[in-house]
Length: 218
Image: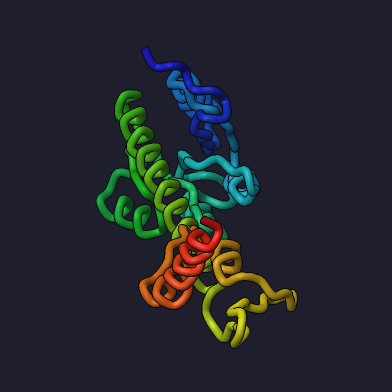
């Protein structure tokens, strides 16, 4: 049997409805399904929660509320300067096709008509949870690619190199071996070998010198 999710693993859900009975019903259902639940009775209160850095990742919105209604709340949330926006589900008595189109056009990700079945709500929330997981994975991959590109860009441009010893000068004006510089500025690692030219030029004369020295010693 899989382990129960820890509090930090649980999806955080905001319920926004001015009717206390409906709000408590949805809250109770979500808690029973293992979610961490927050609540707001007005659009203004909900927006203040969703503007926070630690805002819930999914919100269930009523449409008809005093002051800022659900439609305006949806538009305001979509305009927030955040890289990852919350997943928004309308739960409303507005059942006309035009209402559904208007709600989704305003930025809602899903739409449920009241009265609703608890299992339908649970299934829709699970869809939102899966999409949020995929969104997080994709954002992590994008960051990894950006980091990799940044590391590659560190090796671009002019690199001062000594004409004699072939050391290179880094940004702090220190001279170091080429392999040390590249290992420091990238994920490349070096293994050492001897090219044919250097073997002929350096290694074979040294071997011959050692052989002659051995003959003399004998």
